[in-house]
Structures are given as C-alpha cells and as structure tokens.
Length: 335
Image (cartoon, rainbow, N blue to C red; front, side, top):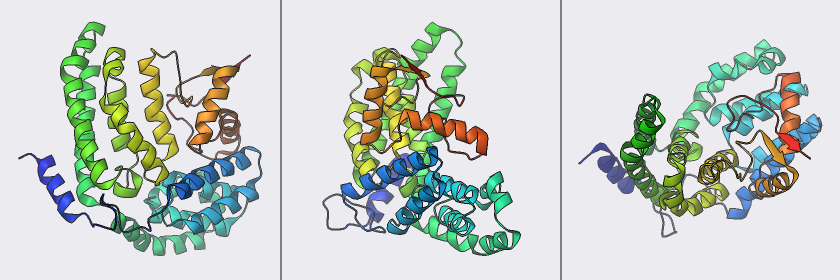
C-alpha cells in the first residue's frame, strides 16, 4: 500500500459527514452556489472601480464583501490592502492585512509590499505583529493537513516528471517522453485528484491553504500534447466539478480560467482561447467572446485588465495580473 492509499484512507475516515450524501467541509456554513457567484462578481466589480481609479468605492466593496464571507481568497485580500493604503484608508488597510494573515498571508510577505510598508504607521505594525500568530493559527486550524500533505507530494512528483521533459532536448524525444512517461503518470495523478474532489471538494486555498499545487497538476495534464488532449477524457470529466468548486468558493476564477485556457489552447494548436489568459492579442470578435466567458465566472474584462496593468506600473500596487503570460503585458486589441 503506497502513501497515497494510506492518506486517502485517513481522509475518508476523518472527513466530517454533514447532511449531504457527499462529505463536505463542516467548518464553514454551507453556502448556496449563488452566494460565491456573487462573491466573484463583486470582486470583478471592485477591480472595475480600481481601473476607473475610484479607490474609496473599491475599498467599500471589499469591506462589505469580507464582512459577509468567512472565507475570502488571499489574492483578493492582498489587492484590497494595497488599494486601501494607496487611498489613505489606513484603518481599512490594516483590517485587510489582518484578514489576509487569517487566510495564510505570511507577515514577512506583507512587509515586502512597499505601499503597505510606507503607509502603515510603525505602531500599527507592532499591533499587527502582536496578533499575527493568533491569526495564523486560525488559518492553520481551517486546513485539512492530510489532504495538504497528499497534494503537496503529488505536486512535487509532477514537477519532477515535468523536469524530465525539459531535459529531453529534441522535439521527437519530448514527444516520446510525453506519450510514454508523462501521460501515464498524469493519468494516475488525475485519478487520485478525482477521488479527493469527490470526497472533499477541490483541494485549493480553502481546503489545503495553497492555490497552485492542484492547478499546476491540471495545467501539466492539459499541456501534454495536442494529440493527447484531443483524445483525453479525464479532464473533461473533471471540468464540471471544477465549475462546482468555483461556485462553492473552493477555486478562484483566475485559476479555473488558466486551467481551461491551456486545455483550449493546446487542443486547438493555440488558434483558440476561452478566457484570454494566454493571448497577447485578440480580434474584436474574440474579445467579445472572451469577455462574455470572463464575466460568467466573475473575472474582470480584458479592457479592465489592460487598465490595471497601467495602474500597476504607475502606482506600484501588485494586482497579480500575469495570468498565463511569462511577462506582464497588455493584450493588444486588433481592429
């Protein structure tokens, strides 16, 4: 019996059973699908306000939203804190920093943000430092440590296998490696991931305190090769569960969009896109299609993203906008 089988046994034995047929996370109020859909839409609206430089209005949206939800995404806390500090709403900035620490933001990382470091008074930093351990304890108590361990091990295994492809220098060699080595490995990974999702939900920030490990496993799977993706049945089978996870606050729209965009891009030999994460330019027709899909999951429009990139360069606020691109760049709109 391998470590995954042992861990899955522990997960099943220790999963609290609520009133649903499928085990759910009982540490949270069970929210309707509509409610986290509203959360994502409100975040998109706040980012539209920021792009229009309506700083105080955006801070108010974040404040009201964070008061309503027990779990909020760390990415959103980081942006809210910086925007509040930039708007000289320092009490709100401090509250957002504390909310971020409660959701996994390390104090050392908080201090790296120049706007926060300059705007928050030293005495307030002492106040934040004094409560940081207790807030971090809240974050740690929320997590499922067994599932976190399992997904972390799967992620590291995936990274080692992906490195093998990079060390295979010829194109033909990489194709053979993808087909004979990586694809069978990735199929096992998605099988295990499916078991966890069916038992506990998507293992992301809410469940294990990390948004990237599981999504990178899916990204690797969706980028094996065009021939593989065309015949793949594993990811299409998982995709409805990811959409459900999106509505239940288990995955951020940005992460879902990136996973799906890789699938669409590889499947179409990079001639098509869904959410525009990988594109450096879009036609007007593509833009309309992309923005419609982005709005459906609560992501801001491409135009808003372009304005935020300009603001990031001017203000120093980190809006975490790189998405699937290696370098941060505005998307060109072709006439």
